[in-house]
Image (cartoon, rainbow, N blue to C red; front, side, top):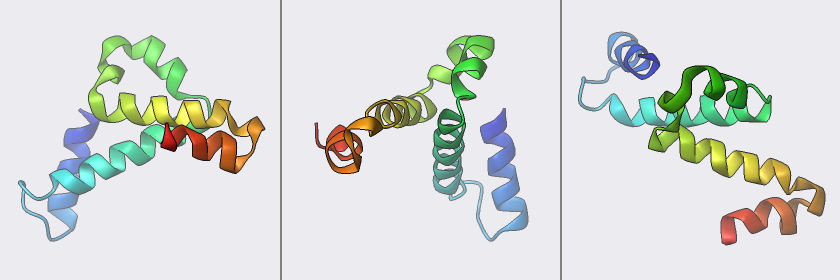
Length: 86
């Protein structure tokens, strides 16, 4: 439902068609997912919403961001950067 709202927002207020509004919608959902993971809200929302948060886009963004946050004590190069290299 949130994704549909964002899609309608993009083709109503910006110069997107219904077909081309998908790419910025996905980018916005990834950004929101990473932001909520960073603030520690995503896991609480996932417990409330259940399997709806396990969709590939937001679930993957959550798993990458939470792994980076978990390993940040090892430094930005070896900890956070190592997540993306493995």
